[in-house]
Amino acid sequence: MATITQAMELGSGEVTIRGWVHRERKSNQFAFLVVRDSTNIIQCIVEKEKISPQMWDDATKRATIEASVIITGIVRPEKRAPSGYEIAVSALEIVGDSHEFPITKDQSPEFLLDKRHLWLRSRKLSAIMKVRSTVMGAIHDYFRRNGYFEWNPPIFTPNACEGGATLFEVKYFNEKVYLTQSWQLYAEAAIFALEKIYCIAPCFRAERSKTSRHLAEFWMAEVEGAWLGLHDMTALAEGLITSIIAQVIAQNSDELAFLGQDIEKLRRITGPFHRMTYGEVLKFLKENDGMDIEFGKDLRTIEEDALMKHFDKPVIVTNYPKEIMAFYKPEDPQMPGTALCFDMLAPEGYGEIIGGSQRETDIGKLKEYLTKQGEKSENYEWYFDTRRYGSVPHAGFGMGVERIIAWICKLDNIKDAIPFPRTMLRKNP
View (spheres, rainbow, N blue to C red):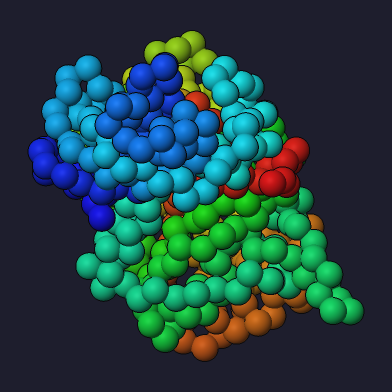
């Protein structure tokens, strides 16, 4: 038994493959079946005069779209075939019949989301999921090569990390807890044991957003390190992105080409990335795009997109206004009024892909910022303990896995970067 790719690499001789009917066309004397497996597609020609009556009956009546089959025959080059090879069939077995497959050409994105359990079989989503697998492996590889331990956070949490407005509340026996927004608070406890840690885990944000960039459930690659500052984190983030892209190019060039991505453009995404402070961004947008943005306003999608039209690889923006940042981001003593934090913005309208910061170590300031943001500081006493017993400077960041996949795969919507997307309006299938 060979995969389709192995059969094509063999190039000639008898092979046996198995897969699903991707397309089919039939006449009185011939049946043309394009069969797919997880590796590729290949055209299979069934000639009535060269097989048994039963096999011909199966080829013409039962080998419908998405029927599963085992096929034996002679593989040979054929320039007119979809993948450059074909199999002259000598034996055909129907393993699983397929009823009338509901997905046809030119159906709406919403219909395809309704049928996501079947649309996953499409060549587009298969290509994306292969890239996704490479991205996940590249993240693990990068952090482990740099001496980071994988560490697993809880999914149920008693506290907000990124603000109470986006928490999903969950019944927890006779109490209530929340689905995690980030591992960060727990990671800050763990660094005092392991110093350098990372994770890839699901996160949840109840944002009432219907944009092409947002998911309610998504995966985040997060990192936290003791004795590290903002500069260390921006360098680590830059290295992570370039490492991911290099591995995807090495392992998924066929998938990228199928998805319409310019591989040579990706090859040019190497460090160093351009760095700008928030204040410099405001000045740049005013001078180059006539956008007059008041200091203290967060950068919206429109401002991020305007900025990134001037760059062909990610930009790292530091020192956002402290007042609009999360409670754990400290003020920069060298730039009062701004926080020791950063966002990494991707080009071509893909927006923020990484966000990170140093962490505030002063308990008094943490309590002050929590109160300003409407949180009860007494709920964070366990977190304050991490500052009471041998606190050290530390920092971390989080990378949205689906956002990096959407950018690398040149996707119009982040929903296609995850197998079963969950959004404000979608919880099924």
